[in-house]
Image (cartoon, rainbow, N blue to C red; front, top):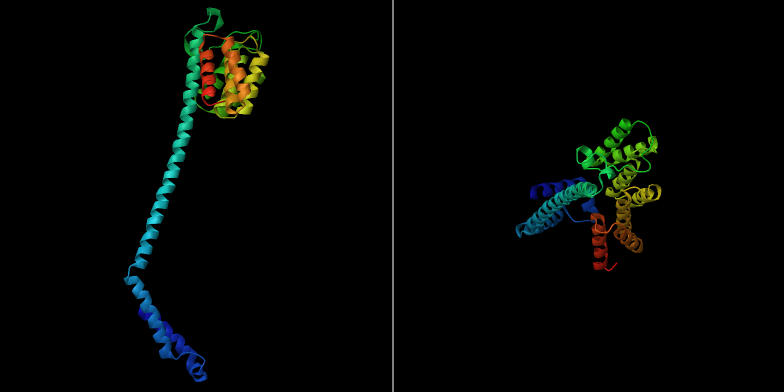
Length: 264
């Protein structure tokens, strides 16, 4: 490096030629070489003192730390997405189990299919809207396909399938359940305003349906997520009083207790 710098100085000085020396407007070649040697010496001293080496090592450590932090951020992002997906799956599984428990405690005519097949997971009560609506087999197939998409966590497809069912079979046998699970699909994807509207339709359009208490519970949950504390409290209190002693009432009371603990 020293030799290269000295040669560069010599060449620069040589290109300047005698004219600059004769004019007396700058240092001589020897003076320039001496200045350059002094500068190179100072660089050598800094290198020898380890300052430059320490700086390089510090930069390398910082770069390594940055790469590690980026990897950690990416890992945490993946873990967060996995956790959210698992939480949604657990939530749906719990909800299905609760529906099965509630169905088991009802009169024999209140749920369809006993404890066998899909009805054990998703009780489909026969309501005032059960009459008409087209072929029962086609309805069941359309409903089961939509519900299967929901179980698999394919929420956009499930939403579209439930919407299609409601459009094709507006008076169908499973219309109240389809309306409820449509709200559920929006709820687990955290589209709370849309979920609120769908759950409210269950209560308003199917007042005799056995899905009404479930929808009311979820309405209370949605108000909670939207920080609408008064609405959440009123709805959860109403559903607990409507179906006392049930799992739904217990869940409503638990959420009310949580709100009290949080000072809501």
